[in-house]
Length: 358
Image (tube, rainbow, N blue to C red):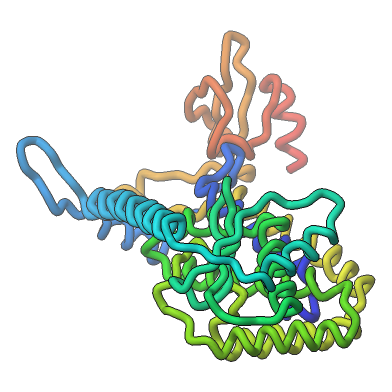
């Protein structure tokens, strides 16, 4: 999919999804769409009282909210604890940086007009290269022997994560996972974003490379992939390793087919997707599905005010008079909700002239 639509279009879709998840409410101008089946029964079920004690009544829905908020607090505390523990462990670890790493970093810094001030830590505590940290990012390297060229590829990959702001995207996604800890689709979304980030950095790093340099980059990927990776890696890190054969295979295909891709084609796809994505985003804020249910005993005494059977007449003193089937029905001070679609007349004469023609 990434090969066909390009990273820009994918990033737009991801950004729109993150934005919607961070704003879980609707606009004041949103339009309610009543649902008469399933939703009313579900709401009645959630309103069942599960606790009644000392004047306190808690419904099933209230209990679910309490569980949700408690889960958010637990997840946030757990995440902060894991992050701080990992940061402390890495900071206190003994770091002896190989000469090949120093030379590779020197070459990498010379590629940029402004040298990067980023700490490099080489330790046996980890088994795959990674970048970690927000305000003080660190590139953490395993204690393995590689050539200067291989370290150059690795360092450029990890430094590119920092340049592209991937760590902050990861922070937002992890925060979302803490909020929606009960939703399995959010975890799938996180995994897909991590995958997209690695592919994006591969493209970012190899785009300026010739074919020989790309093959060396891929050889380095293979060498790192052969190293067993701990399943307990900190979730705040961004690793050079693809972590699975399928992801690694896809990264290979994208890098090898890089020369065949057309930026113009992907730009066209981006523009084609832009309007539908923006439209879906706006609609998600503008339409609210709400349960709608009327008890049988109330249905006989209930009327629906529509543009066909009702209208409003401006009251000389204030507000509006409501007429139903030509008869006075009531008075309202302002137009809202079910009255918003009704025709408004200035006086009874205007009603006579216009209602005949309807």
